[in-house]
Amino acid sequence: MTPRRIVIAGGGTAGWMAAAAIMRTMGRTAEVTLIESDAIGTVGVGESTIPPLITFNRLLGINEAEFMAATQATFKLGIAFDGWKAPGHGYFHSFGLTGKDHWAAGFQHFWLNAQTRGQTQSYDDYCLELIAAREGKFAHLPNDRMNYAYQLDSTLYGRFLRRMAEGDGVTRVEGKIAQVDLDGTSGHIAALLLESGVRIEGDLFVDCTGFRALLIEQALHTGFDDWTNWLPCDAAIAVQTESVAAAVPYTRAMAHDAGWQWRIPLQHRVGNGIVYCRRYLDDDAALDRLLNNVEGRVLTTPNKLRFVTGARRKQWHRNCIAMGLSGGFMEPLESTSIHLIQRAILRLIRMMPHGEISARDIDEFNEQQHLDMLQIRDFLILHYKATDRRDSGFWRQCAAMDVPDSLAHRIALFRETGRVFRKNEELFAENSWVQVMMGQGIMPRTWHPIAEKLSDDDLAKFMAGLRDGVTATVRSLPDHASYVASFCGTPRSDAA
Ligand SMILES: Cc1cc2nc3c(=O)[nH]c(=O)nc-3n(C[C@H](O)[C@H](O)[C@H](O)COP(=O)(O)OP(=O)(O)OC[C@H]3O[C@@H](n4cnc5c(N)ncnc54)[C@H](O)[C@@H]3O)c2cc1C
Image (cartoon, rainbow, N blue to C red; front, top):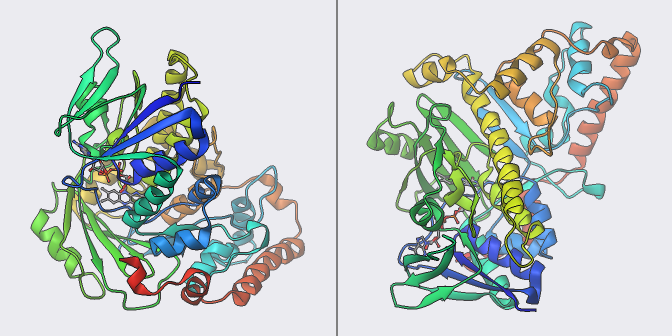
C-alpha cells in the first residue's frame, strides 16, 4: 500500500503530539513530515494539564517516570481558585470524585440533606484528591484510585515527543513556510512551499502553526467564531520564576479585578502568568501586577501574548485539520488546550481516511470537536458569570452578561434541584460541575428525596465513614515533592 503523506505544519506542542501519535499508531501506513521554523519559535506557555493526558501517554507507550524527568513535571490534583466568588474567598476544583454517588442521585444530594441534619462538615472533606492537594501530599494508589494530571514544561514535552517521533520515522524539516499551494480544481492544499524553495506535497495537512493558522485560515479562509463577549480576557503575560518552596500538587488561579493570575510549580521552577482584559487593564499595569505578585527571582523575559477567544468554524476543512491554537483558543483557566489537541489527534486517527477523504468523516469530526469546545466554553464561562464580585467594571460586566442557553439551563437546573448531568462524553464530569458551581456560590435549593431515606444515624455513619476513609488515606501518603524526587527526580542540569 502507498503510505498516506501526512504533512504537519508547525512544531509546537500540537505539532509534536500529532507527529508522535500518528506515526506510532499508523506505522508504515503513513509517511509523516513535520515542518517547523526555529526563527518563529513556539508560543512558549502551556504547563498545566488534566488527567486524560495520562491516557495519551499510555497509548504512545511512554514511560511515566521518564516523561516526568524529561519535562520536569510535578503531579497535579486540581486547581485552587482564589477570589473568584468574592475577594478573600477560595475553593478547589479537584480531579476525582467527592463522596459516593447513588445511581439515582449524586453525592451532593446526600451532603446537602446532611447539612440540614446538623452535619456541618465541608463538601471538600469527602474528596481524597482535594484533601491530599491541600496537604501537599501525593502517591500513586492501587487501581488508579488517585486521579491526577501533570504540571510540566511544554517546551520540554515537545522535545521529548520529537525524539520519539523522529525515532519512529517522522521527517523533520526546518524552514519557514512562505506559501500554501492549493489545487485549482478541488481547492485542497496541494503543497507547502518553504522560503528555501523546497516544496512539500501531501495528502493530508495538519495545521499546527499556532495563532497564525497559516493553512486553515490564511489559505483556506475557514472562518472564526468569536466568543469574547462571554470570555472577555484577551491578553496574557507569562514569566518563569525560581522555586522558593516545595512544589505543591496543584495549580493556582488567583482572580484580580480584571482577570486572573496562574502559578504552576514544576520541579525546577515555577510558571506564572497574568490573564487580563485590556479594556480594564493596560499591558504595563498588568506586567507590574504580575511582577509584584510572584514568589522568587524572575528567570525569563516576560512573554506577552494577545488572543481572541473562540474557535475556527470548521476544525477539518478540505484536506486540512487544525490542531492546537490554530483551531481556536479558550484561555487557560481549566487547562483544556493541550487536551483539545489530544482529542483532535485521537479523533483524526479514528477517522483516518482510507483512500479518498469522506465528506461524512469531515462532518462527523467537526461536529464532535465543536461539541467538545462548546462544552468546555460553557464550563469556563461559569467561572466568570457566577460571581458575587461587583468590585470592578470587569466583574460587573461578567456578572451582567447573558450566557449561552445551554449554560443558563445547567445553572438553573442545579440551583433548583441539585442535579447535573454529563452529556455526550463531555470532558467535565458531574463532580467538576458541582465543585465549581458550589465554589462560585450557586447552592441548590433542594435535593433528591432519596437522600431522606436514611435515618439520621445511618446518614451520619455513612458520611463519617467517607470522611474517615479520606483522612486515613491522606495520612498514609508521602509529601508530594519527596514523592516526585523519588519517582523521577533528576539533577537540575538535565532539564536544560
Ligand atoms: C497564555 C496562555 C497560557 C496557556 N496555558 C495552558 C495551560 O496551562 N494548559 C494547556 O493545556 N494549554 C495552555 N495553553 C495553550 C497551549 O500553550 C497550546 O495549546 C499549546 O502550546 C499548543 O500550541 P501550538 O503548538 O498550537 O502553537 P505554537 O506553540 O505557537 O507552535 C506553532 C508552531 O508553528 C510554527 N510555525 C508558525 N508559522 C510558521 C511558518 N510560516 N513556517 C514554519 N513554521 C511555522 C512555529 O515555528 C511553531 O513550531 C496556553 C496558551 C496561552 C496563550
